[in-house]
Length: 459
Image 1 (cartoon, one colour):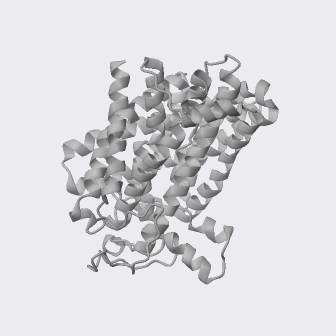
Image 2 (spheres, helix red, strand yellow):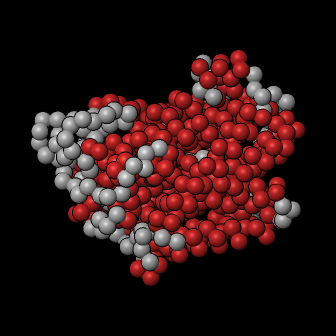
Image 3 (cartoon, helix red, strand yellow):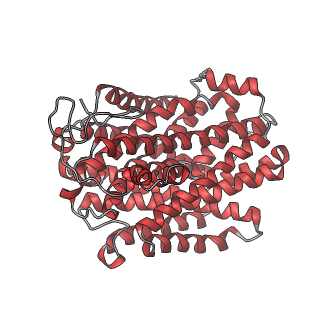
């Protein structure tokens, strides 16, 4: 019965024992990472310090979901459709939390990333097309995000966007190549704090409380093309395939950083580890959706109400907010773009490289030195450079975003099918297969993603 499915549930049974008393897959209890809450308590580091120390892949994954392309999608929804999309934030929260927890559990129990699991258990004709679509979507997304970072910097300093792209790309690649995993993970955790800027911007917007409650509590669905396209874009940018690969791979990286260097050492997960992973994922996804909610709220309360419904980028949304939310609201929005962009681009390119290297069985990992994983870092650099070149072509950022959302919308449903099959495969998961309610939420998410994509094309 998938005893590892403990999202929000306290487990009192002894670690490493199933409900019937049968031993689960053995696993050495690490000294840090997901168990750092217990370590913090033992050292009397209770409070925010110990709590923040426990958070890791789940928080980073959730925050990276609010990248500039995602912010542009939410801003477009708020500007064009007003408060009618607010309900999608609480609605998608349990769906994305379930999927990301499943991905985390796959990485923890199998001891390998999602790409490796798929390579070992499924045919190449399934794996390689999925990798190709993932590479294309992530590269375009990374390019769009770097353009948004440059545009946001322009709001603070009058420097041409083109002149900023090369330094931005260079700084991101340098961090990934020469920074070790622990440094990068800690930096990413601090960058998540920048996303609170969007919440501040929403309060400066002074929204109508009655309209906000109606948009939040009463789902509104229209069967016209614009509405369905925006809905698919929201689903595609909220439940994105790159997050699946990143989550699983970072759970593995966490274990490697704790000294579990072989796949056999990493296999399996205790109840306590899964409980902490669930907490990490839940907090990360909640944080992601709170930001999503407040971006829609801020743009609906200002841009939509004033009739400015055509938003071309996240930076445009920041500029447009100034007459309505004031200079402070506009700058807070721009600050959020900077932080989320510098967080999301490495996650996008890193997730791409993890997926490709795992699919081909190449050496990979941010814990490895560049000369030990040349292909891994070469793919990161190539994705970053190609994404940057896309910005030099002058492609409309919203068109690029739409293409990315469509690719994600097409790629996510079949990838979700594979994830659900893997997480119920006893050969991979042992006793940690999904419980009935995790399966119900997982398959519901898959069906909704399929339905939204089909409805968009039909409309």
